[in-house]
Length: 272
Image (cartoon, rainbow, N blue to C red):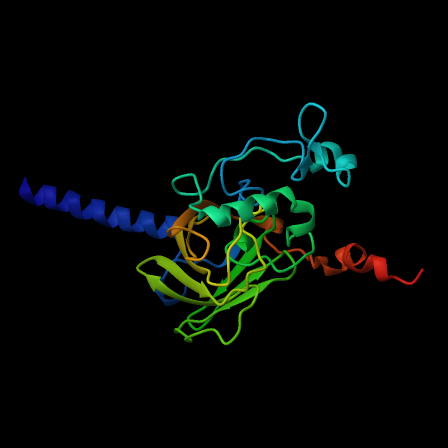
């Protein structure tokens, strides 16, 4: 009887190991295979925090209720904002008092201030949850992220390169495995990117620690720890799911939007 129990237990362990190997594909170095084209299915790019649907990102005082800014009024429902749940752990971003005031100023002047409108590089973690896909390439020797939005890229160092030589839009990233989770530490950012379209921002002291955990062939957990002592009272996290594209849709399209905003940025100096 004891032998039979041991036999059944052994068979169960073998079955579980086979099942897990089928659920989580194995890639380079025997680690989970993160290769592929990924995208979110949430509203975090509008606002990391929970928000109701509204008429527009940029509202002004109306006769009864706030109305869309005149420059976007003609967009109608196309320029409106869908409601979304918070992806912030604890629901609220822990701003310092003066920083919260600046966030509100950003939000109230979204049309002029959001770097996405001018096609500036999105920064980290915003590049992950914009409404555009991104692709992960990794081998035993290299990890590379390519983003559809603005042609942004990240080369992930696999050994700590030390202090970033200069600040930049996408920062400097280095990654390592903690068991089956790929961790990326990103620093060396400038202060020109936002976290979303709602004015949530950071300083050049920003550090982002990302965690990518594959759940099965088509689903991944994404977590980013945000640290910035100039803007926030404490570190805070966002969490969301990433979904892998399949079939003919599993490829990046071009969205090199710099040329789309030339008239917006430089039109007033165009020869008449």
